[in-house]
Length: 119
Image 1 (cartoon, rainbow, N blue to C red):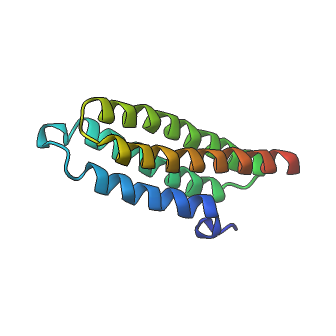
Image 2: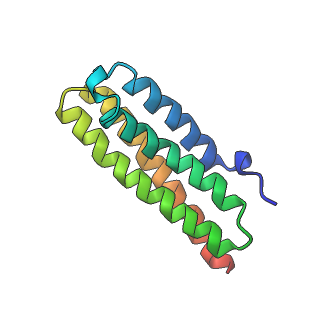
């Protein structure tokens, strides 16, 4: 059985989830069930899908969960742009988060390719 906490992509995505929680902490209360919730769920979905994938019996199953995590990353990228354009996140903070997200998404693609090569 794989230990998801040993994967660098999981570690980075988990840290990224924490950063999203902190970044959205100051969003207006009327966004609590809107953009705040959606951004947090998408961020957590990345690390959670990596963790779930490590528990799957085959490399192909694991890769499928990495693709789901990547989809959550794409969703979050869109939500970050929305938060920036609604002036809920300052452009520099948003850019830092977006850069971190791109790094995580690249790592997901790389790991999925490695798993596909093993199959």
